[in-house]
Figure 1 (spheres, rainbow, N blue to C red):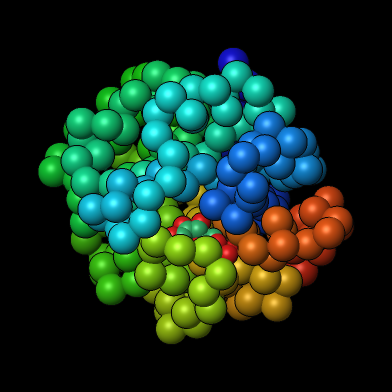
Figure 2: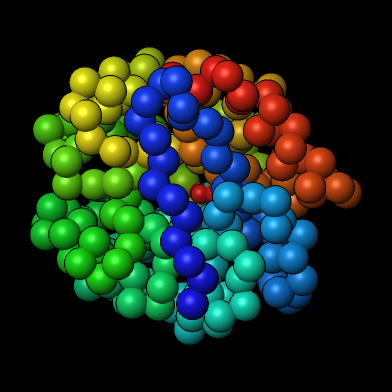
Length: 234
Ligand SMILES: O=C(CO)[C@H](O)[C@H](O)COP(=O)(O)O
């Protein structure tokens, strides 16, 4: 089993950009080799789509269990599925470092987050662009990761929605005020240009699909993202 990455710091002085390439943009026929292209990353972001919650279908638990066995870096699982209360614990049992479910889909999010933590994963909550962050700010102590989607979930290669920046700023202010150790993740349209505004708005974990896997030199792409965000997070 791959070791979990250390929990992100909430101190602005020590917070640093964490880059999570999304294998949604990888070659699904050669996943092990594709994982080997991103060993400089902090985690690999694994998008699970069920063709119900979003209009796309990707991987399921058996594939994630196998990825967990061969991945040189921790797994950051993002569940874009209905009924996460039923399915998410399986991904934690598989050894994922973090399991993020959608706020819009969970029936009992606090109970689910507690279950994921009890199974050894960090618990994340994801918000579609139109989902307000405010109801979740009282629950920060119950989660380890808040994912603000910067595209409509479902597909890679979309443009970053900069109208999400105020939501990120409000989330950052609340996280810093809460004292809770909660990573603030953005996903969708992250490039070495858009990462600057996202980092300045308070994000500290960046999911990047096309901008990493679309590059010939994935290591250089990861480094360029990290450098672009350096010193700006929070
Ligand atoms: O969750 C996702 C889509 O729902 C993907 O992780 C995201 O879109 C990454 O792809 P890109 O960086 O190309 O936008």
